[in-house]
Image (cartoon, rainbow, N blue to C red):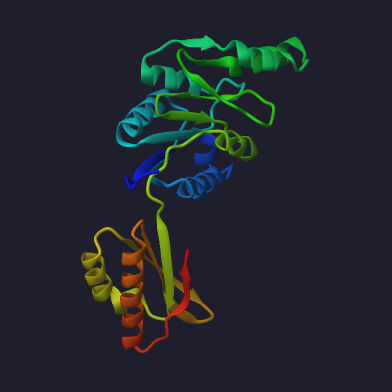
Amino acid sequence: MDDKLVTAGVIVIGNEILSGRTQDTNLQFIAQYLVGKGISIGEAQVVPDIESIVVRTVNDFRARFDYVLTTGGIGPTHDDITTDCIAAAFNVRVVVNADIENRIRSRPAPDDVLASRLRMARVPEGATLIDNPTGGPQGFTIENVYVMAGIPLVMQAMLSTIEFRGGAIVHSRSVTAHLGESEIADELASIQEAYPRIDIGSYPFYRNDIYGTSLVLRSADESALDAALEELCAVITQRGQTPLDIERD
């Protein structure tokens, strides 16, 4: 681990996510998991099962981020096109991996079912396998792109086997104020300007007939975080309110 900010891009692949029929929970899990490894999510996109879009997004992300993680589209059906898309992005052939094929054939099934399952043994030429502790077919990695299943339990199992090289751990501070965003907008802008390496987010809420704002600060520099948090609390106090729910990770 070092002080360099290490970034990742996440690509969620699947029409079922975009249609609203399936709720994606993978992004939240991946983000929380990677933060603990010293890796920050720089961007995430949900894309349809359209080869040109997947290929374009993969090539864009792998040029801009240290790691690219994809979920979905490596199953046994015709619309599982992620393997072909990754191969196209890297301009390599799709080949049958013997290890995955043997794992699939070890589970007896009717011929038609087995034929469908064997689609999951296809990987881009030159790819390295990502283990699947659940016992099913593996994912794969090629250069800085990591391709995993969309089923949350399987994705989580695959993710746990990947050795990431992280950077500086990003920490957070948070405080709640019973003030509207507009009441502290100028002060927030001044604090952000004073601490350019801190990401300051403001999130308004309305509950129990009270308007308020949750303020979250994120940075690898804990001393700067503490100083900025102190200034925010002073602003809240000057506006006649009490800083609430102060949290430090």
